[in-house]
Image 1 (cartoon, rainbow, N blue to C red):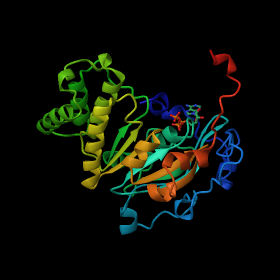
Image 2: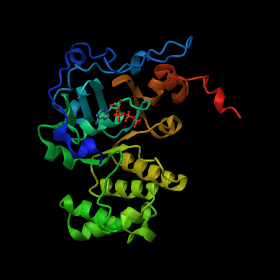
Image 3: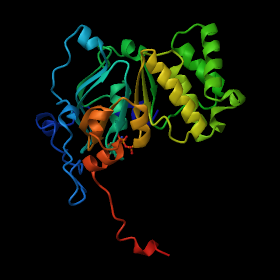
Length: 317
Ligand SMILES: Nc1ncnc2c1ncn2[C@@H]1O[C@H](COP(=O)(O)OP(=O)(O)OP(=O)(O)O)[C@@H](O)[C@H]1O
């Protein structure tokens, strides 16, 4: 958990957001936005019709089966840090049972959006429903359905890996026998059995990521929200995690995952949203968003910002 997550109450919640609210699709005032840094002559970045993002004020799906089909529904989500508009009124619907990727350049607002969507960071404005339950009006019910791997995980790292995951299960109100069984299964699946008794503070970055993932999954939540789960994780472990996540989705679970690795998102996810400058530029199935190109090419066309490296001649040896 990062600072923002740990101290949501310290964040300003009353910052003026007139512009973001009334002009939600405009680039935020203090952010370069998606139009900045585009390469001259590159193609029209407009997403195809099917991949056009939801407007922030699109109506929520009506209560009932339509809403039940959504794992996550976000409307008009805004976050302002001082003068900085980090998230500019986004709207997203994540179908239940989907493997949903969230991609965007550094500073796009992915972590901020995911933190607000999971009840870790109080939004300046907007609403979030997890399986129809309002995260900010009924956080306990909503959080029961969520498993979260936050960015920059801060864990009780004096505990051993085994103790940490056990603690996560007991905290969720699970009985000891079930927790013990699941902890064993998770340690095996994530190749952490040999280090089960090692304090987490002595884990490598990848091992820390995996133990945090185990803690997020122990209660078999309906929706898993994972911020950069593959960062620092070795290829074999990453393949194992992908397999675990795929079979979880196959059984009806929903995974929402942020990543910078376009190729991975294209192969792994069935839906994707592209975020830049705090706005959703495109959202839909992966095929809709990539529109016949590779996701990476489509992403670069939409987001821009490629640099030629000119000006670094001093680096040429
Ligand atoms: N606590 C904070 N105070 C001020 N600005 C913040 C804070 N947290 C995030 N920001 C700003 O909000 C914007 C969005 O940040 P965020 O971490 O959500 O981006 P991201 O898409 O997750 O980026 P990355 O891919 O680099 O992890 C950035 O410009 C960042 O500097």
